[in-house]
Length: 201
Figure 1: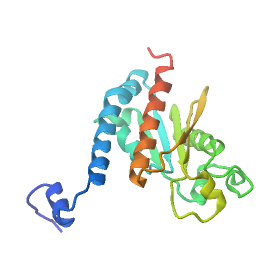
Figure 2: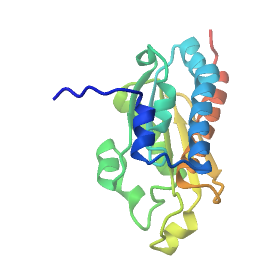
Figure 3: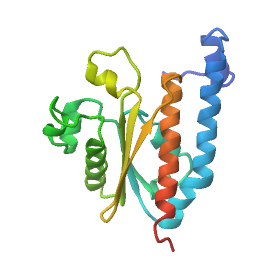
Figure 4: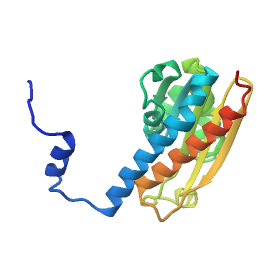
């Protein structure tokens, strides 16, 4: 069915939402715009200069980092794959050892899992760089284990010769969406530092 409409999608969204806007929504929109500007100005040019490719696993940002890294035409020259394997079954299919995810193991929210995810996605996609982030955003806690780890996020960047893992402690006063933006911001910074440390031509 062909749908012919008038006006912009923003007009239609405002109408659908009854023109309800809030300071929170403005912050989310502003953060999204600024993240894209930062990525296009400071991070993407480094990938182009280095002639390196990347694949990502996002367990808390759920595609936001992929979005930020593909905001220009020609992004397929450096961006290979972005996935969000939310369930343990999908993480295991990606190649994680089930021992990592058991109650007695390190768990999904751990530097070990972050590194393993980054390594597996790099190997699967045959990209130069694998990046993974995994964490626990605030939620209705179901156990002491998850409550203890709320606000923890681990970032891992992996290549054939080098890997690094970074632990983040989130601002617990932020909303869930703003926390995702905070994580994405830290991912951009980590990628920028990582690429700058490489011997670029």
